[in-house]
Amino acid sequence: MSSNHRTRLMIPILIIALGVGWLLTAEQVGGINWIWTIMLGVVGILAFVVSGFDKVSVVIGPFFLIASVLSILRQVGHLRVDVEVPLLVITIGVLLLIAQQRVIPAPAWLVPLGGDDKKQ
Image 1 (tube, helix red, strand yellow):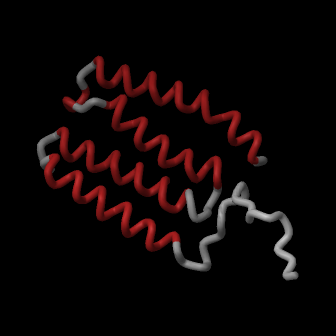
Image 2 (cartoon, one colour):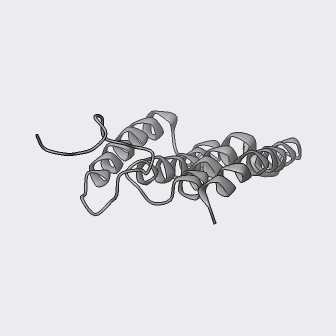
Image 3 (spheres, rainbow, N blue to C red):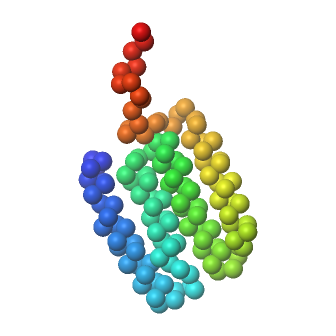
């Protein structure tokens, strides 16, 4: 699937997720704000769908997926917000460390400044 095709799917997928979240919230399923929770998860998934596996998506994707899960845990009373926020800070730090690994490629849209990498 080409990158352009994947990008064109983003808006419809986000709108569908918004509608599903809205419906679940309106029906008070589980007492959770599903709009917020589903959108966090969808952003996490779309990071990989649009960008593939690279230094940016390896941070953004898991971060939003974990934020979605922590949001559910907080909303059902299994996690306090004063614990959720530090967990998210720790998560972003760990993901940023993981992204530094050489085996994880730079994103395709990141082009070195100066064009060619010719030595003078």
